[in-house]
Length: 350
Image 1 (cartoon, rainbow, N blue to C red):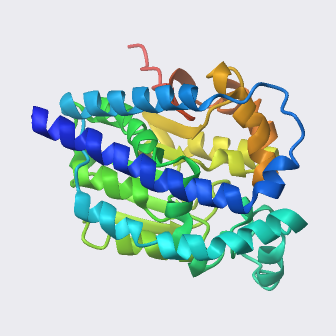
Image 2: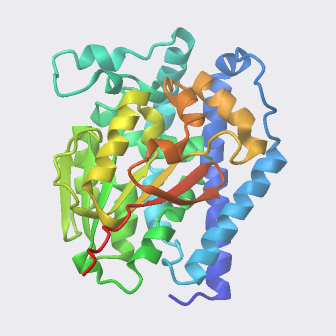
Image 3: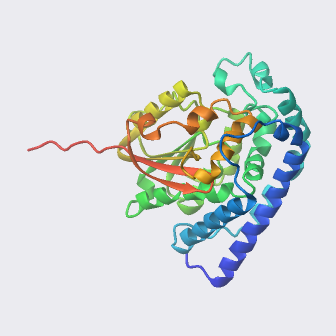
């Protein structure tokens, strides 16, 4: 995976273009919802300046390039793929007025009404998170979710997700990927697993998600990949055998879960991991991880319907995941990647 100066320049140009493109969409959403922004009371912590955020973005992309240069994954230079993803812009812009309308009236229960007859879906799931149309229930939501996330993070979401692959690459070094299993909990549309399979095509992967429409899009995204499975289930009740998974990963899921469900899901992860297995949690930064961004943590749940975010932002992760051992953290802009290891069984003395 050797890289060249030309590739580095292409990478820098592509990331700059992504930030400008998705940042413009974020700005459009913010301008449309300026009444909601102005109605927010003064945050407990200072909101970072644009210069501070730009500096952190630059550091994120610099590390992303170093990871590619080190051979952890190919440099992300697929312009055609980026162009195809950009087509969701129309649906995103079309949905902004609906989102703003829900923000104004705090309309976050439409999904609950639509799912009233569906006994499979837990109550916490039946909400319009981010005030998006359809909540996590509809095909419309699944169609624009990835674009919404990129717009929210001004084009940095992909780079933050890629950082979650670093501990996976380190774990697989010297191992046969064809004999290893990776479980993506809350896999959504399969964006992260698609990236993983592009780097490790022989790895056995399972996408687990509670949303049928999102899982359907994950199947579509991974239709050409081999050694893939899909499970429609909740993180707190996974239909998997004990000690059956080598690597588990969860990206941007745990801050969406109520505290009790969060704890139950953490226990399930410890249960399904093999001794010596790895769990990677990639989620929002918490208070104190990057103090300059604590003001954003204050504002986020007020701007977007995130009923469980405040409790997550102050959760002791080492305590929450007590069934596995906390091995370290890596802060990637607005995302924290926390690594946990399940202790190996003590060998019997002879």
